[in-house]
Figure 1 (tube, rainbow, N blue to C red):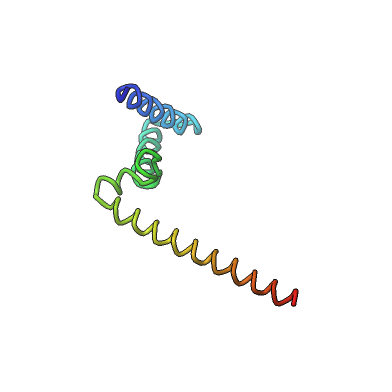
Figure 2: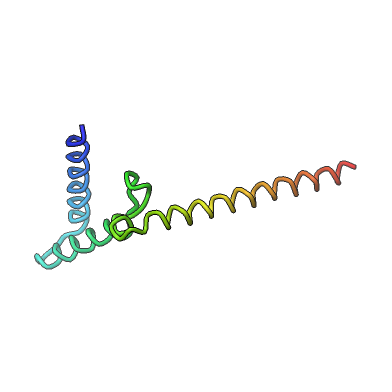
Length: 99
């Protein structure tokens, strides 16, 4: 089963690369090479991968996964606390209006 998943990922990567190259007419081979280089750079440094917990391959390779996931969890908890506080503030404001 792992082989089929890996094969599918490789096929998806090649399809994405091909689509990026076909988006523009390249008159010289250097233009194609530049576009491939840009795609690979984007894919490794900026594209978040669901199979990597929405991290980039570079983050995983350099061992930054845990610190990034920890920071995301802190942001999530702060956001939830802020939403909860806003809810309670609105409830008390509504209660004051009804009094």
